[in-house]
Amino acid sequence: MEGPRSPRETELPQVLDFLNKKLRSEAPWSIAAEYPTALTPNNLHNMRIIADEERVLSHAVLKPLIIKSPHVIFKVGAIGSVVTDDQHRGQGLSTTVINDCLKSAQEQSCDIAILWTDLFDFYRRMGFELAGNEVSFVIEDNFEMPITNLSFSTDPKVAPDAIYRLYSSHSVNSVRTIEETRKFLSIPQTKIYTAWEPNGQLAAYAIEGKGIDLGGYIHEWGGSVPKLLSLLSFIRAKKGQPFTIICPKHSQNLIRELQTKSVTMNNGFLGMIKFVNFDQLAGKIKRSFRAEGVADIVLEKHPNHYVFGIGQDLYTINHETDMVRLLFGPMDYRAIGIFKEETVQKLEKVLPLPLWVWGWDSI
Ligand SMILES: CC(C)(COP(=O)(O)OP(=O)(O)OC[C@H]1O[C@@H](n2cnc3c(N)ncnc32)[C@H](O)[C@@H]1OP(=O)(O)O)[C@@H](O)C(=O)NCCC(=O)NCCS
Image (cartoon, rainbow, N blue to C red; front, side, top):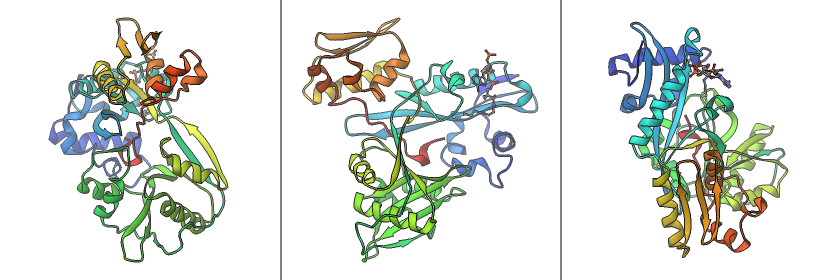
């Protein structure tokens, strides 16, 4: 048995074959089509395998993302396609592969690592915790369009640069190219809904589904709130049944508008998050506070605890996972009742950090 190591270019078909058999046995497409920026020759150096002479036994892939937000530019290592051959489970192979992905994320200056899973306890063993915010709305009933002069389409042939233009206006988004947007648009089982201005410009878009995941879920969208709401109204009428839209918590205008409709709202987590370069992240956060006029922010990592607060209002945080939730949410500083009101008001200038990963970037 050898590894963890990156596959050689000639081994990529064998690795994809392993992933397809283990993770996509029912799908008529390759898993590489679902993650076109992660499972690609360009990202081979971020794939990790353990293999014996003939076969791949365990795999995981890291996809570093640069995510812009109003205060901080994050480098986030997304980890996905974690799997071990059935005959070799329970021997520590996945743990070894993931730890090697984390090492690589650290070497590539990622602030944090993130992954999406329902095996919470498996990843908690490696220090990941459910954190960040996600708000989802089930659009239960039809509602009236706020804007009536738009036309709507479900034609999947949409110019990637039009989508890219609206995507770029989000306050929190990953750095993508138009070429990457084109690849994302071709992911199997993706429905593309668009709203168009009378002059032919794209006004809003909504993307549903992504390979075997997110069927019935709008996971990427763009456009101004009234135009997007008009598009959602079109989708609800067209489907004739409820569907779900996933939103970042900082999309406050959209959330406020949706709450006036017949919806079911759910608060969830962005994903499972782990610090990778805490000191680097703390440096970014402290700079953000200084830019907001808060010079006495304290955010320090000691061998067995963290010290966090403002001025003299300081607390010791013993668990890394609590610190993750203090920085990325969900954490209501007022409700936990440890900080003075004056401190809470200052903390809320920057925290919780409005981190968001749009659906196409999740792996
Ligand atoms: C989950 C999976 C990747 C683990 O691979 P593995 O190589 O067996 O993992 P490791 O040997 O490193 O770790 C196994 C340990 O995790 C534990 N574990 C496995 N699945 C778990 C789960 N669902 N919840 C909690 N712990 C779990 C095992 O009990 C074992 O613990 P032990 O070492 O105390 O006995 C493997 O079972 C698999 O390929 N599953 C199918 C694909 C999948 O679900 N992938 C995850 C997608 S997010």
